[in-house]
Image (cartoon, rainbow, N blue to C red):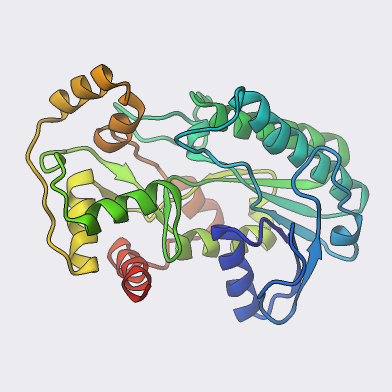
Length: 313
């Protein structure tokens, strides 16, 4: 197996869990060396670029877990974010995939994003069969990468498996998860005590478990899977649960969601407010049915593990 993005949050966890299951292979990172589990050789690459040479990384492996990506950031330094997302997430990914197909790789598992489905659910949960509706540069790039990979699969025979996770939380979590933890630990009162939305999240352990299943399961070939903990939670209850796990007091003010949306529009923070008060529900029935898979770790236990790592820092 080859794991790309192995120095990142998901890729490193995948390498550790794979080694624990006696799965060996290579990791590809931009740095030489690195503290990776025994059984995994680190191959240095120039990055996920449209012209990266993946030859040495791909030699002798049969499956690829593609975790590397240019991720969504709140304040993007690029003057043209979509172009940069396309250069890395689309062109860089397809460059890897073409070389993988030529090298005889049997299957590539691609970590995409639930953003391909859309940013918010209203009447029903997202399913893997829904028409894509990406509404951010990052999500657009993931959707275009999916389409390119599926076209390559049809022409080459290499199997493609797409996994679309929502917010991933766990020990070492970054991005939106890290921001939520910082808010709770700061003790600053938050106007999020009356939010009755429903959001699906996925713990790192559950995502990694599904990736490992998708690397080999016969029914996973050329499928798109959604993943979550199988439990939906409101933003208010999420923050209360995080505070409890972190052993700090939750300071949540009961401000109506409608008022927060107005405030977001007036301050130019509508996207942030939407993520906090809007619903994003995921239906993982297909994942359960085809793969006979269920999330092995409950939301409460996943939260406890994530908080324990933060408490130890």
